[in-house]
Length: 338
Image (cartoon, rainbow, N blue to C red; front, side, top):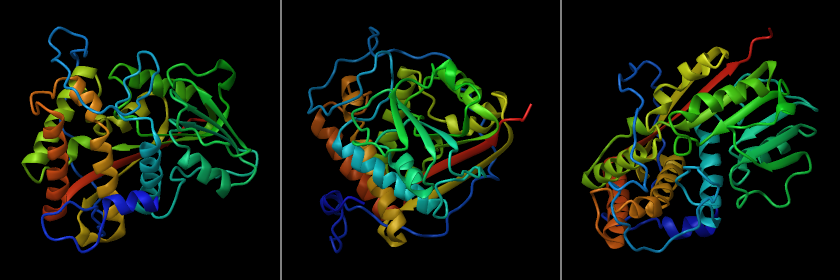
């Protein structure tokens, strides 16, 4: 974890009631046996430019992606790059110290696609783990690309919705994560079809994303934030509960041998380093939603920037004191040989 970032967010020994980046480590619960909710994917949404959209609230604005028609909600700046590195380390710990979860056996000269590079945390780790591997990385925004990129990595500013025809049947592994706040309902099947096309017959796909629809509400600020997020996703056409449908969508794209692994983390200092990292990751992610939420007029929950900031601080306190939970889902599968 970035030490400066940690110092700003976590100070051991703070009195009860103060906000701190919490640490947790109780046994991680798999949700694989939990029945899927019957909630349908949203069919309609209200764009932010619609007359029904509320007037924007003045606030300090962070840098966000600039790709036309893209909906990704989180910022694109140094703070976000630090968060993504922290998140990568957290995911690796959560899933047993592994970066590769699909069963793919990658060797020198294997071809890998990383969809949604962000800061390049995952592809940088893989490039070191398997020397000689060849990685193509794509993202709609290149602000956070690692510079210089590892020598066996080529970075491309492009959308997963329109991959090059020359990549057809090329990759031994396709990796993607963090798209729950980036793809509209109608874009998910398109993206998965593109990923299927570029996967080599016999190759693998590995997708990891936030299980946001199952977040545990532990207090009024937490409920307020989740209500804002649900409304923002509705207006933008994003699918807050996409992980509840992800395995089925991967199967519908043509992949076989689909496996799903859902895990939760309790965000409280009673639970060790994993939880502290989870607390910090969620805290920074929700803070990063300030601009889209306040541009939407506060989404019927807050009226000023100060109210938004106070909600985030109160939410962090609720997580620490009552044990808020965040959840993640990995879906892995294989493209048939013929």
